[in-house]
Image 1: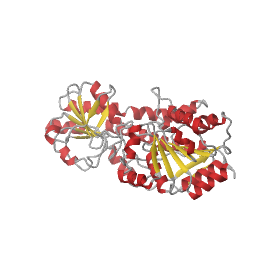
Image 2: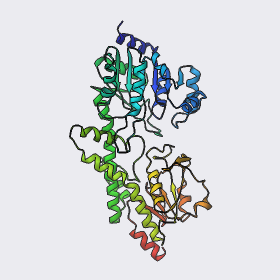
Image 3: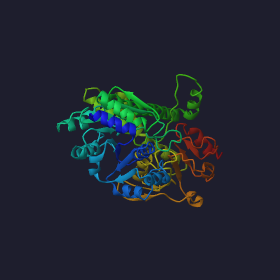
Image 4: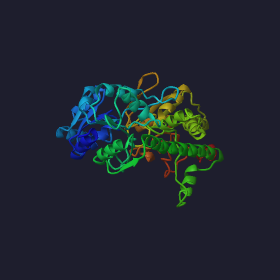
Length: 451
């Protein structure tokens, strides 16, 4: 029996042993779906704290309840480990490690390279490897296929290789790993066939494409599209600020058109594991072909500068109350990058915190989901408690994340000036609310006449 036929049989009968490398926001939910699909799954992560937590049945990912981990552990088909020698027994490996940017905004593929090094030492002949980490077009072939074939192995014969981009959206109540369509591209026809068979047991809908490069590019297109449109609406918000026009009302009016318009909303910047990073992977790779994407670079510049614009907005508002940022007490409301999650990755609130401190402000934050973070100096910063008498003593508040648990009416009634970057106070009429993208000159008049 050929390696292809053997692996196909194992996938169909669910006797294959699967490994997921990287047990974060992508890897851990994938492990759970693979266990539900009937496979024995080894979750591999070098962070022993994660491994120990999972062995105790305790989840550290908001979208994966501890009860789900406990059920998977009790089944005997989920084995968390920090031992790469486990790869020697695996019939399939999904790589779900981080792909951040370096300090100079170039792709950092060091995590992928480290995994490939371990796979080279431990790979079981005839295994399927699927890269899920978001990266530039060509990574699957350049960093995995080339490295393994340099050892004398042949893709499609001695090992099988696919790319299938993760599409995790933390905190999304409607879409998860199982019901989000899964794009997959194989290096050969046999690779594609095996990848589709495996993932068809794990997710609801598998979408085959012609190659790993197409699959890699599709993920970058998805998030670059969002980055560019967010940048456009952020620029429109700044324009409306100047013109004393409410950008939120403009968006609502434009959204009544039943065709040809898709609403995006402004904010304090972009955050998370995809939108701030993925377009730069694409831009970096394009330069290899002497192609320079003006859209990507411009969008990145606008979005990166939104925290600075929020600081400027804060200084405008404080000036209206005869105060400056220096020595003012400012509270950031919400530090997670999106509502109702604890995820702080690339949150614009982190940048705003540093900018306000650099301006001489005394800065705190309140976030019931994200209890602490580490600043650029390595200090651990904790969320303040929700104490209305204490909150009333701040000179200004800046809402960065619109958590559903916030009592916006209660916050508005404190009378403290609030810069609302998310239109969270849309239905609250109060002269102390200053929305991003609405201008402040009319409100200046109200304060001057004591309205």
